[in-house]
Amino acid sequence: MVRVGILALQGDVAEHRRALADAGAEAVSVRRPADLDGVDGLVLPGGESTTVSMLLDSSGLAAPLTRAVRDGMPMFGTCAGMILLASSADDGRPDQRLLGAIDIRVRRNGYGRQAQSFECDLAVDEIDGGPVHAVFIRAPVVVSAGPGVDVLARLPGPGPGTGAAPVVCRQGHVLVSAFHPELTADRRVHQLFLSMIGARSGTGPGVAALVGG
Ligand code: GLN
Image (cartoon, rainbow, N blue to C red; front, side, top):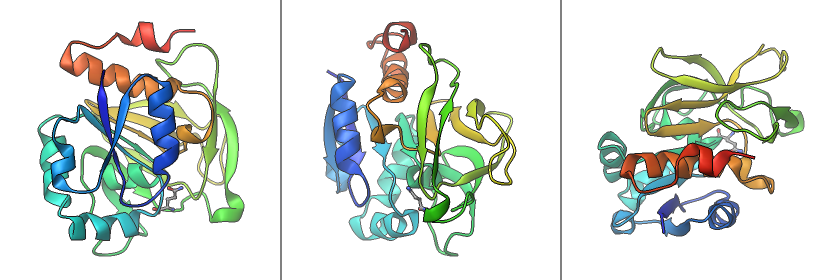
């Protein structure tokens, strides 16, 4: 069984644990560097990216995570997790730590504060079976994405001042979503991530087997 770590320093860890279990993976909490041993991929949950950034330092995880993603460990970040994986972030703390694993620039809380949180249905490339219902909570806006980044989904219409902003992006073994797929019962985005892990190890089921229908 694929073993997926969840960065469990802060944020909605339990929801990701449930989603990964439903999608057929074993989920383990990652709080210390040793917890990364034997993990095939890592989920960085939503929460508060500035807080997680500080906890990455105090837990000693900052350097091992940077190394792991550079060495090709598949990673999936949702909302605050997307910010942590990005190459640059506007409106963060000046000392905020980013893993720089995907070539996107994000703006924290770019859709507004809590009151402007919203939901919508999204068509996501490589996910069949109809639109994905997406829950955005104080989400980051992807301001720009580099040429190596695949944009798998954009907001359907002009969002709050953002046009058709990218909301699901992938670069190699790194997947990010601005919304929270772990908060709905639809497991297809987590399955897409598991298919990336499978493709890397060469043992897992392909995208078609996991994501179809
Ligand atoms: N606004 C949060 C941040 O900047 C992210 C919110 C979320 O993960 N739902 O880190």
